[in-house]
Amino acid sequence: MVCLRILKSAPNLEKLFLLIAHTYSKHVEEFLETQSVSSNLNLNRLKTVNITAIDGFETESVLTKLIKDRSRNLEQMTVLHY
Image (tube, rainbow, N blue to C red; front, side, top):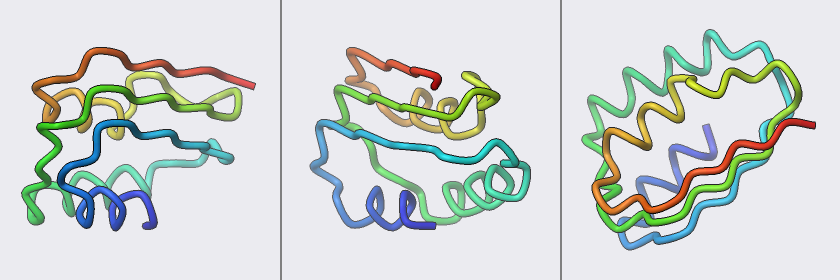
């Protein structure tokens, strides 16, 4: 998963922009959940997250919950659907 690799390799990341182009996310969410716990992601510097997703992407997905839970300095999270 490219997103997880980016997050793991950029502990000082302040802005994150994602484009999610599929709705079938059960396996992706399970993978993210297990990998984030085992990798102990550090997203403390993350301040802004913008997600553009295909219609059908759940706003309260595992990905958004993961970011919210691990980003103490998060100031803005936007999820747009197309």
